[in-house]
Image (cartoon, rainbow, N blue to C red; front, side, top):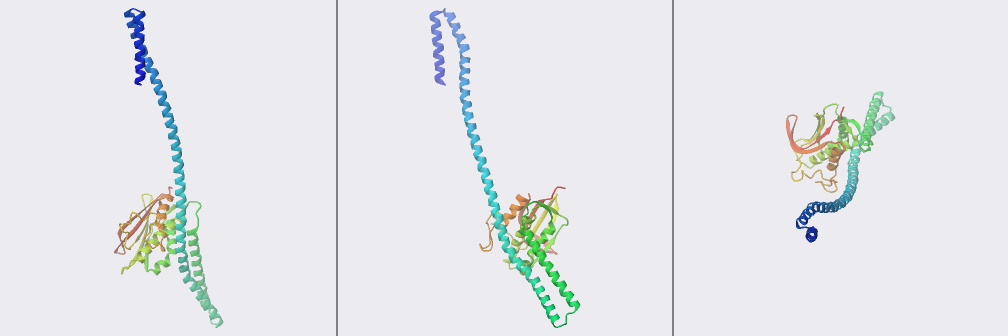
Length: 331
C-alpha cells in the first residue's frame, strides 16, 4: 500500500513539473490542484476496489473451507449418533440377557410349587381310585386344585412372554396392572429372602409407551431393592414399598426399600454403563443405565435416586428411593 502511494505522489509531482515547463505558473498550479482533486479519489476508489476484490476472494475461500468443515462435522455427528444408537441397542440386548438369566431362575421357582401340587393331587386321585375310595367330593376338590394351578402356570407363561416380547409400536397400558405383573415374576425371590412388599396404587393411571421396556425398568428396580436387602443383616422387617400417583399431569412411580441406602461416594455413578457394586459374576452394571435410558429417552420421563426415610404402618424406615416421573398421554 505504501509503495502505491509513493507511485501516485511521483506521478502527480511529474505532472506538476511538466505543467510548469509548458504553461503559465498559475495555470500549472490550477492544473495540478485539479489533477490532485480528481486523481486522489479516483485512484483511492481503484485501490479500494482492488482491496475489496481481494477481500471477497479470501472470504469466498474461507466460506468454502467452512462449508466443507461443516459438512465433515455433520458427517462425524451422524456417525457418532449411529454408533451411540448401536451401543445402546447392544446394552439393551445385554440387559435383556442378564434379566433373562434371573427370569429363568424365577420360572423354576414359580413353577415348583404348583407342579408339586398338581402331581400330589393327581397321584392321590389315582391311588384313591385304585383303592375304590375316591369320592365325588374328593374328585371335584382335586380337579379344581389341578385346574387352579394350571391356570397359575399359564398366567406365569403369559407374564414372561410379555416381558420378553419385542414391542413394535407404542401403546397404552395400565400402570398398576403392569407393575403387578412384575411383582408376580419376583414373588418367589421375595418369599425366599423374607421380604415384605407393600403397594399403594392410585387407580386408573394409563401410560403410553413400550410396555415390555417399562416392565424391564420395574424389574431392574425391584431386583436392586431385593439385592440391597439380601446383604443387609437387619432384625427389623425387610420392606419394599411401591407407590404410584399423579401430579401435574404426570405419573409418579416410587420404589423404596429399607436397605442401607446408596453410598454417597457412588451416588453420581449408579446410572453409568457397566458400573456395579456387585461381584462380576452377579451383576453386569447395565441395569440402572438401561433403566435411565428407557425412562428418559424412550418415555420422555425422568428418574431420580435419594436416600430417604419413609413411614409404613406407623413405623419409620430408611433406605434408597427411586422416583420415576413420566408424562401422561394428552387426552
